[in-house]
Each structure stands twice: as C-alpha cells, then as structure tokens.
Amino acid sequence: ETGVTQTPRHLVMGMTNKKSLKCEQHLGHNAMYWYKQSAKKPLELMFVYNFKEQTENNSVPSRFSPECPNSSHLFLHLHTLQPEDSALYLCASSKERTGETQYFGPGTRLLVL
Amino acid sequence: ELKVEQNPLFLSMQEGKNYTIYCNYSTTSDRLYWYRQDPGKSLESLFVLLSNGAVKQEGRLMASLDTKARLSTLHITAAVHDLSATYFCAAANTGNQFYFGTGTSLTVIP
Image (cartoon, rainbow over all chains, first blue to last red; front, side, top):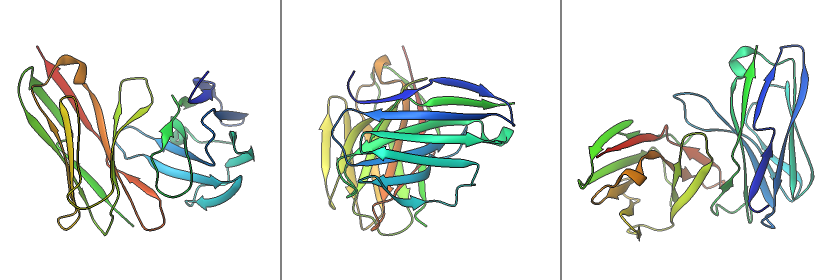
C-alpha cells in the first residue's frame, strides 16, 4: 500500500478506555504530524515529529500521548478521553520539516462516549 | 499566531460557471497551500505557492498568491460536478507550522 495509511478508520471508546491510533507512511518522509479535525473548526496541529524527535506540542492535553518509534510510524495513545475529543484525527507526513507539502492519511473517526 | 480565514464557507454553484474562493491570513507568510477533501476521505494536496505573485493551474483550478495583501485565491473555471468537495487553504509561518482555514464546502449543481 502506498502513501499514508491510518488504522483504525473508525473507533468508538468509553471515557475510561485506552486505545491507540496508528499511522504509517510509505513515502520515505522524515516528518510526521497529528492533526485534529472537528466539525466547523480549522484543522488543529497537535504534534510534530522530525526524524523521530518531537518538535511541536501545541498545548495538547496529556490524555493524548504520541509515540514515534521510527520515521515511518507514528502512534497516538489515548486514555481517559472526554466526549469533546470526538473528532477526525489525521496523520500527515512531509519530506522534511521545511514547509514542504504535507501528505495526509485518511483519518481515524473517533467517537468518545 | 497565524490566523487563516476562508470565504465563502459554503458555495453552491451551477455547472459551467466561474467562481473564486478567497483565503486571507493574518501575519507574514510566504508559503500557501491548497488542499481538497472529499467526504470521508483524506486531504489531497492541490497547489503549493511559494512566492509573491505565484500562479499555478491544474485543469479548471487556478491558485494565486499575493503576499503583500496576505491573500490567496482559488479560481474555478467552468465548474463541473467532480469539483464538489471541501477546499482548504493553509499558510505556513516562519517556524514551518501549518495553519489551516475552516474550509470552503463547494457543491456544483447540474
């Protein structure tokens, strides 16, 4: 499979659950990103990893925990989420952290009950 | 913080007509990106505009950038149904962080 893939595509979880979102890119890129897309709001950048090192954390609550074991994989670990965390979570990658075009995955639609 | 505003937020247009989507941003940025998102699908990169006066065209879509006015436009020529989607612009600041607009939902009516 090519491009940026995300699993699962849909996730329903309770507020006490722990789950993880996975992103994998097959483009040979070195930078990866997590975004949150809520209804009627702009995409919000959550985390940035460049060469496996976290370079941005945009005041994201600690109930979201990213992990980047290598340049091709990015995880978002979720625990004790709130209903307002329900959204589409998009992963993206770019060749370098230099403002080049970001390529997006299909997203994970998350519903927190 | 860089703020990006798009208008209109919703656009319904007839096939064959022309229209322009506007993207304004609040502070200095010399890189502007346009994306397309179909329902239930990911964002697809359309254009990257890297300098003042840049103009790029692909099919019925043409994007331009005026960094002095802090304005980018996405012009649609002779719209067809396949262009129905949500279009996002994003501006990058000097720290290479992307700031997205809220999107313009375009519906092309036969």
